[in-house]
Amino acid sequence: MGITDGQHTGTDGNRKQIYRQPELNIIYIKEGERPELPALAATIGFFDGVHRGHRFLIGRVVDEARRSRMASAVITFDRHPRQVLQADYQPELLTTLERKLQLLSETQVENILVLHFDRSLAALSARRFMDEVLRRQLNVRKLLIGYDNRFGHDRAEGFDDYVRYGQALGIGVVRADAFLPGGEKVSSSVIRDRIRRGDIASANRLLGYAYTIESTIVRGYGNGHRLGFPTANLDMAACRLLIPAAGVYAVDVRQKDSSEWRRGMMNIGTRPTFNGKAMSMEVNIFHFDGDLYDKPLAVSFIAKIRDERRFGSLEALAHQLEQDREAINHLFDAGQIGQQQMEVRP
Image 1 (cartoon, rainbow, N blue to C red):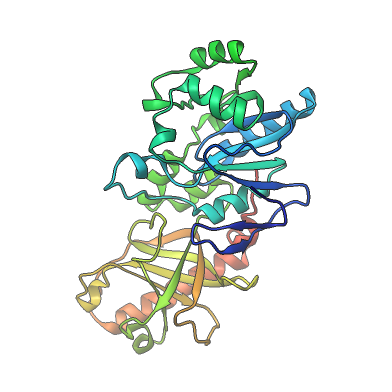
Image 2: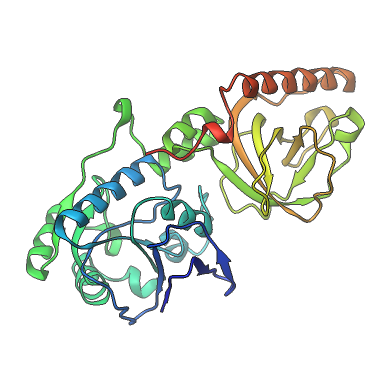
């Protein structure tokens, strides 16, 4: 029923270690199961990216739970709802489920409840969902709604409906204020748009941390070695997250089983100087000469340096790469960028 020992069971059935607070419970909820839960003050959503707006809302849930002498909870789903509703939908996510749970566990919430999203759950009206799932199954007694959040079949109903249903069911429903730092909207869709355009600095500001992807290293074309800038090639097909726009980026890199971050520069694109056609992701890790083949690598995007372009010769490309590396090192040395400067903030 529940996993409270600092691990969670992934979709592959294997338990995986996550970062968490000692008092945190992560519980996967099966259909019809009624875990033993105290009265909860909760919020619900997919929480892709766990961005600053999400953390603002979760902070309000924690505050409300304390005022109401309830336990706090975040209710989320194990997959994007559109993956169930549209068979051909390929989500461009900001976080995997594992990463999402890690980020949620770094908040002050006491319970993370993961619902299996399927067609039967999708078919529930908002009222039935509030009655059968929130009230009966999860013991939710207070529900905080994001200022633009909707749930229930076809997302057909809104906040006033939730308040009315809550009054009949014994669930207090409250809408959180919008989180608009500097008047700017913070949402997963806005962040995705910034990443698609290569506006990493802006995306990171809204996320509150450096956007990070993970993938396995595969063999490439060897072009980097020829230029004096050996690269590790990430498997794009295996990357389940949104890939930024083509260009050259300052990045922080670490092996997944390591806590050590290393500076690097990544090129995303078709390698036009080599007449390439297929998209690739290649990262040059500064001052590193190890073997990374078939190993998972985490890459945090810090800033876009320039667009990808064709050079007239390999010498000209190598000269530009040297300039790129110098520019990236200058930014790191000046303390302007880096994973360590991008710690998660509300």
